[in-house]
Length: 179
Image 1 (spheres, rainbow, N blue to C red):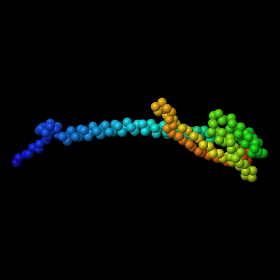
Image 2: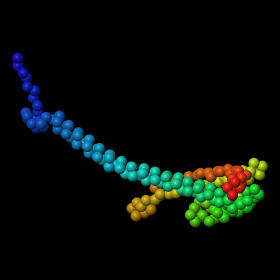
Image 3: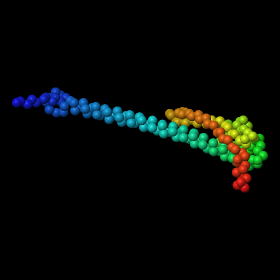
Image 4: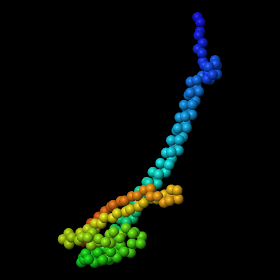
């Protein structure tokens, strides 16, 4: 029985040395590693952009919560200063407008409400319910410096509604019980 020896040729065609398949395998591995590193370096920028944009959106929602709180607080403060048993809608609108005007420096978006306070406030005498309903639009843009120029990279416009119903007679009874 005779054992045949297979011929392993190297790059130069001589016997011995490193087989061609190993050389090809090394080149493929080096190419794959280079490609992977290139892809990971490129994706790092996209991750930064998505983190930046999520913070951008979070800032808008945070601003919405602050404005909602301010408007609702202004309504409660205006109601607190009034005689709720003899509720006068015009007096409430005047007080509410004064409260909103006081916070205009902190919340410039309140200007949108001040223009339509009388349209957004309704009082149902029969049921004793005060309805407050306002649409507010928040706009924000994100700019970056590219080649020494400010370039707008993102812009967001968010519209939300502040809608609350206040039971005036219920509030009056609660205030009387606390006193």
